[in-house]
Image 1 (cartoon, rainbow, N blue to C red):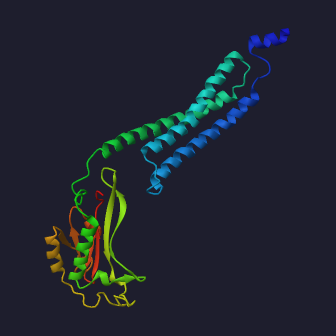
Image 2 (image 1 turned 180 degrees about the vertical axis):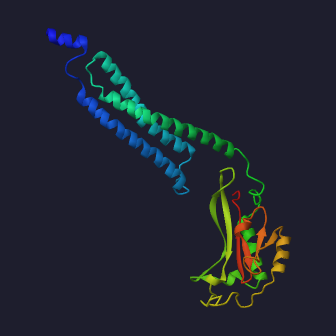
Image 3 (image 1 turned 90 degrees about the horizontal axis):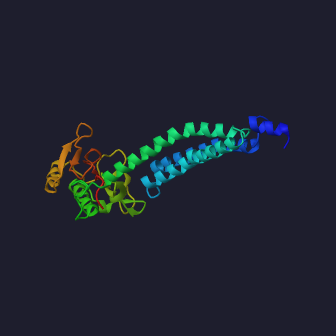
Length: 280
């Protein structure tokens, strides 16, 4: 080794080493930061907007967040350690990767600390919520058939007001009745929500004749005997609230297992019952 080269080593002067690799690393680290954001934001989107069957649970979200943190924090931290050691061995080693790693870590560490802490807290709260029992209202039909009960009450209400669901058709198929959809109980477990619907304006009879002709508000043979409906509901343990200020003679069923604000009955007859989310 020449005297000049030895002097470079002793004083850390001379040509910079490892510049190509350091620059390549410095360019890759910000890309990894962006990729980590994509992974993490994608986890939140799948949790909030995915289909009911495919939505990420708390554990799935945490896994994605950890993967993002590994990309944005783990790799830059390793790069920083390796490059600092290289710099200590060779003072002329390029600092480009060290600077890039520090910049990325300054951005990534606070962000990932925030999202990971928030998710862990969310999982703890979710665990506490799921440990709670369903409410008494949600368990109302635990030993019965909510769909059959709702359909029986709905059909009887329609008949009292002069209609007959079993004579209503749409597109050649019997219409109306009770149907269900999935929902979340108050303790975050899966439940089922039932809806009963009879809307003669959308139905025909078996021969294809409209049940509710244009410019009519009631089908043939219908009545306005809402007091009789009230009496029947009372026998089923259901109260009634007048909504005549909204629609003449309209009443809303009230019970802890019904969504009273979105359920109603009025002459026509129009009948719409919606339950709360119930235990399956």
